[in-house]
Length: 377
Image 1: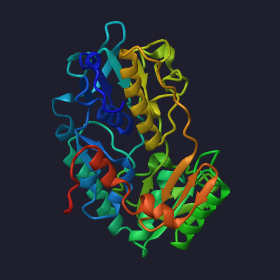
Image 2 (image 1 turned 30 degrees about the horizontal axis):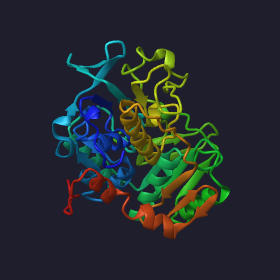
Image 3 (image 1 turned 90 degrees about the vertical axis):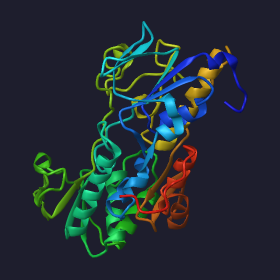
Image 4 (image 1 turned 120 degrees about the vertical axis):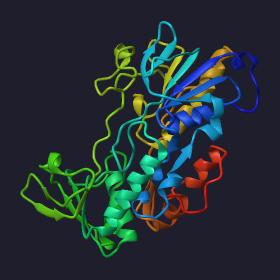
C-alpha cells in the first residue's frame, strides 16, 4: 500500500474478522487509512509460533499474547461474529450488535487445539494459566507421549527433549514418515528424524492411536496410549497434537455456503475475493488458497489490504501467487531444519532464523509494542 494516503479510502468502513496472522497483517496496513474495525473474541493476538515453548520455558507464555488495544485502540472490537449478512453488508456479533462494512476481510483461521493454539474468547490470564499448568505437568512427568508426527507434534517433542533431556519422550504417528507436505524433501524429513533421535526421542511410525477418545487432553492423569498394531505405551502425560480443521462454525457457513468447499474453506478468485463477491476477501487457513502457514496468511492479509485500496481507487487488483514451499521446523532452541524451494538447510540457519527466538521480537515490533523482558506469568 505504500505511504500514500487515499481520501476515498478514509471514508470506507473496513471490517476484519479474526486477529490472527492474516488479520493482523491486514489491520497493520489499514490502520489510520480507513474506518477500521478488527474483531476478535480474544483480547490479545496469540503468537502460536512460540506457543509450544511456553509449555517448557518458565515465564514465556505471557509473552506469546500481544494485546490488541494498545495497537489498534478504538479500531479493535472484542466480540464473536455469529453471522455475515452480505446483502445488507453487515456482521452480527453474539451480543446482538451489528457492524456495517464497505469491505470485509475474513481471517478466521483454523482451530488446532491446545497447546499449539487456543480456542474460545477467554481473557489472556486464563490462557497463560493453562500454559503454566501444562509446563508444571511436563516438569512432573517422566514418561511423555506426543500423539501426532506433524510439525506441531515434532516441535513439541523437540522442545521437551531439549529443555528436559532426562525425560522419556515418544512420538506416535499414523504415517510411516514425518511431517505432512508433498513438497518437502527427504533431506528435510531425515534431518528432523536424526535430530529427534539424537535427543533421545523415540518414534513409533505407521501406527494410529486407537484409544484417542480415552486420552485426557488436559494431562490430568496417567494413561495408556494404544495403537491399531497392538503397541501400548504407558504415559504420565500424553499431549495430543493432531488435526487442524477449518474454523467456519456459523460465522460464514450459511451466508457463504455457495462459496465453500467440501472441507469448509471459502473459494476465492486470484485477488482473494470471495467467489461471486467484490467487497469480501478471505485469507489464511479459512481460504481455499491458504496453506496452514503463518507467513502465507500474513502475505495474504497484506495483499487483501492493498486490493481494498486499489478497488476504492478503481485500479487493477493484485493477484495472489503461490509463495512456494518454505518451512522452518524448530527442534528446540538449538536445532531444526529449514527448506525453501528445493533447498534444504540444517541447524545453523534454522536456529538463527527462527529456533532461538521464534519470531517473538518481530511480531511485538510489527504491533508497535515493546516485548516484556521480565518473566511473564
